[in-house]
Image (cartoon, rainbow, N blue to C red; front, side):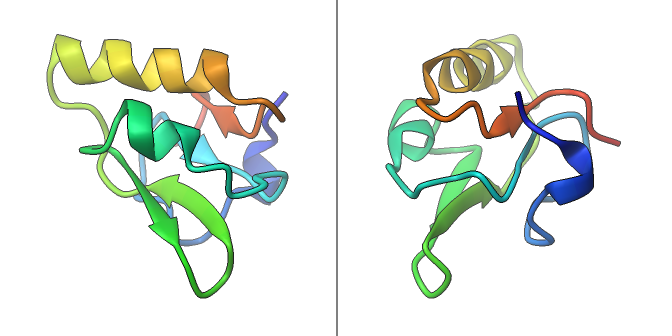
Length: 77
């Protein structure tokens, strides 16, 4: 389960975030490319844009459920 106290600083403010458990598998950025990006320098993904449509919201939830290390959370601020 993702821990909002350990989320990456690159995450934009909002409900969804990626924490430090991310293993840079890029699955989330493949599922929801409008919302997740890869930080290639540091080797992790992060939320680049919070979902703005029901479709983006659904893709972010799919990315969260698909994350192999559960590093995506939806209880951010």
